[in-house]
Image 1 (tube, rainbow, N blue to C red):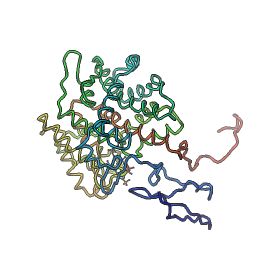
Image 2 (image 1 turned 30 degrees about the vertical axis):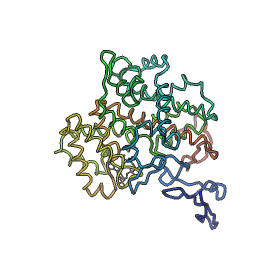
Image 3 (image 1 turned 135 degrees about the vertical axis):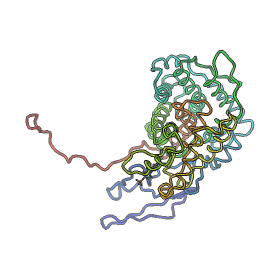
Image 4 (image 1 turned 90 degrees about the horizontal axis):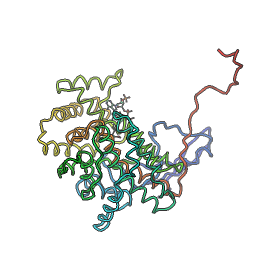
Length: 431
Ligand code: CMC
C-alpha cells in the first residue's frame, strides 16, 4: 500500500500532514490515526459518511458504476457460475475452490448441519408468535453456550471450525424458527441434498411426506443467498466487527449482527417493502404513494429504494429482478398482482425527478420479497433468509479483523454537547 501522497490540514495556524493510503480500487483514504496526538482534535463523522473503518480484502463496491466484487470476482459471474457454498468458500478462504476442495467443503459443512439436541428445547422458551428475527438473535447467540470446544481464536483451526459451524447451522436454525412459529415438527437436515435444497426441505418438508425440491426454485434461492453473502462495511457488518473487536465470542457477535440487520433501514427492508406493496394494493394508487415518499413532512419512504453507496444502480437488484421473473415464470405467476405493482412502481419512480435527482434506485430488497413470497416463504421470515446468507460475510469479516496485526478494540470518540461541569446540589435546593 503506497503512502506517497499526503493530505495537509491547517489548524490554528499549525500545519499537519497525513499520509494518503491507496487501495486496489475505490477512494483513497487519509490516515488520520495521529490527528488527536498532533492537534488535540478529533474528526466528526456521524453515520460514517466519509470514514473507512478498516482495511479489507473481502468485498468491493463501486457505487457509481453499480459494481459489486467478492474477492475481486463480479457478483454477476459468481451468481451465474457458482453455487452459494462455493461463494462461501471464496469469501472464507480468499480463492474459489477447485473440484476437490469444493467436494471436501460440502462434506465438511454437511457434518455440522445438526444442532445440539438441547438447542431444540431452547426454542420452546419463545412465544410461538415471536418474530423469527427475535428467535434468531436468541438462538444464534445461544450457540456460544453450546459450542465452546473450539474457542481459541488465535488458532486458525479453531476459527475454521466455528466458521463452518455457523455456515452449516444457520439454515437449520432459520428453518426451525419457521417450524416453531407454524407449530410443525422440526425437520432434521438431509445430507443427501445440497445446501439450499436441504434448507428448503427443512422449511417446507414434513415427516409425513418426502419433500422433492424443485431445482429451478432451489437455484433461485441459492442465487438469493449469493447476492446477500457480503456487502463490505454496512451497519450489521460493522456491528459484528465492533462487537468482535473486544475479543467477544463469534457466535455472540453474529447475534449482534442479526439484531442490527433486523431494522427496516437495513435487512428489514424486504419485509417492509412487501408490506408497502400490499398496502398500496393497486397500480392506480402508485402516484399517491410516490407523492407521500417525496413529502418532507411525511415519514413514509419507498422501501426497497435508495442506498448509501449505490448511486446508479444496485447490481444485486438487477439480478434479483431476473430471478424474480424466472421464479414467477416457473410457478405460472407472471401476472402476480404484487409483481406487476412493483414493476409499475419502479417505472414511475425511475422517471420521477425527485428520485432521479437524489439517485434513488431499487435496491436488492425491492424484488427479493416478491421472489421469497413466491417461493412460499412468509414475510416475517424474509430477513432471516438475509441473515442466513450474510452470516458468511459477517464471520469472514470477523476473522479478517481479529487476524489483522493492526487490529485494536473499536472505540469511537464523541463531540460532547451535554451540560457543562456542575456540582450536585443538596436535595432541598433542586428545582
Ligand atoms: N424514499 C424516499 N426518499 C428517500 C428514500 C426512499 N426510499 N431513500 C432516501 N430518500 C431521500 C431522503 O429523504 C433524503 O432526502 P433529503 O436529502 O431531502 O433529506 C435523501 O434521499 C438521501 O437519503 P438518506 O436517508 O440521507 O440516505 P442514506 O444513505 O442515509 O440512507 C437508506 C440510505 C437505504 C437507509 C435509505 O435510502 C432508505 O431508508 N431506503 C429505504 C429502506 C431500504 O430500502 N433499505 C434497504 C437498503 S439495501 C439493503 C441493506 O442494506 O440492508
